[in-house]
Amino acid sequence: MSARPEQRKDPVDAIVEQWAAVRPDLDTAAMEVFGRIFRLSRAMGDRMEKAYAPHGISRGEFDVLATLRRAGEPHTLSPRELSATLMLTTGGMTGRLDKLERAGLLRRSPDPHDRRGLQVTLTEKGLTLIDEAVGAGLAVQTEALATLDAEQADQLAGLLRELLDSTTNVRP
Image: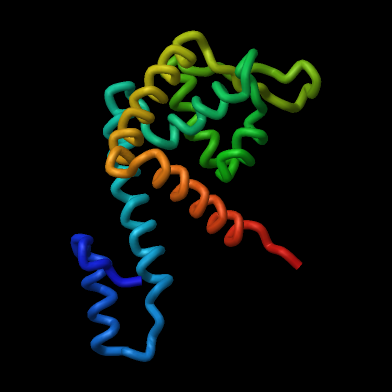
């Protein structure tokens, strides 16, 4: 899977070449793929943080607000539903909710169907902010994908979907 002659070499190519020199018996094809995925994830994560910063939120806070926004009217979920969707512990979720509530972006209220439960609802201020922030984030992602044509982007999305499915779904 090494770089084609017309492709520029990247740091992953250098790592693979080093392994080939010291351990020529290793098949580093997986390293070439996942090394690039990890580096891309880190680079895009940093860019997304910068896109959300002018809105006063982090990526983690964006995730909470975006989850409520995607839930549709009335933009309400329980803390447990949010934790499950975002794969966070309840403690981690509580910290995010506290900060977002102090900022006036969401509110917590008793669940009318469960007197022990709470509901988390996006406020108007939160709705406005998340709609702006999601646009800013998509602009960054679209810019990054501009090096690929539409067919390449579709192919990449499909390949990543298959890879993600194969690593997250255990089959008998």
